[in-house]
Image (tube, rainbow, N blue to C red; front, side, top):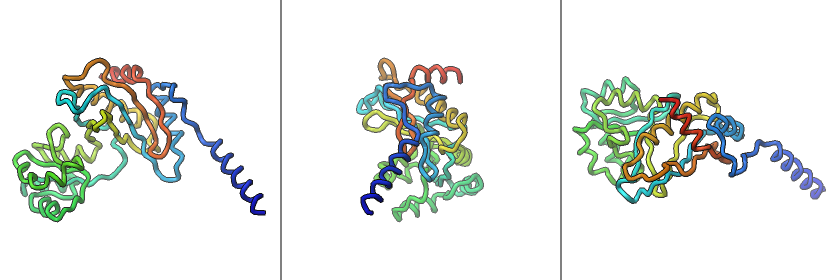
Length: 246
């Protein structure tokens, strides 16, 4: 009886796996619109998955003139709620809170950091108050939260910065291996929304090409659901689509 149950269970599992969408072979390079369509079909988890972009660039981050760090304003946001904190003057704090910040003002932010707390996913700061964050470099730096102009988190007008962050402004930076990883939105987004976010991110990377980059900037480009296999995007087709945005 146990053997029959095990056999039937294995057969059901096999039929279930065979019914799932399969990723294209690694040798197949897809146009951006087709890649987005395939990725949405591959997002079969029972919870809301995200669609992620993974890019391998022809850069060596150990060289100062080959580092890449910039921001992108995703036209359709990511569908995820984030908490934004702002280190600004008390006079500016109220406007930041009205704009949607979870934490604002020198006293509130410094108190949270002094206790080792990070009740936010993005930290904005005005240039005048940046020195106040020096004691917390070891807390913020490894997590990519230290404000900087290149990351779009060192802002002259903090309330506007809060609005941009909540509308989908994302930081783009290389990891140690020369890769960029970015969440483009939920898998249940419409295809044109995911495609718009994807092309906006690619355009931002292309425009931020470092002075030390040599030859073709893009080595490989993939899209993937957060819990599924990836599909490879045709780089030349992506570049053609990005040029059409200009």
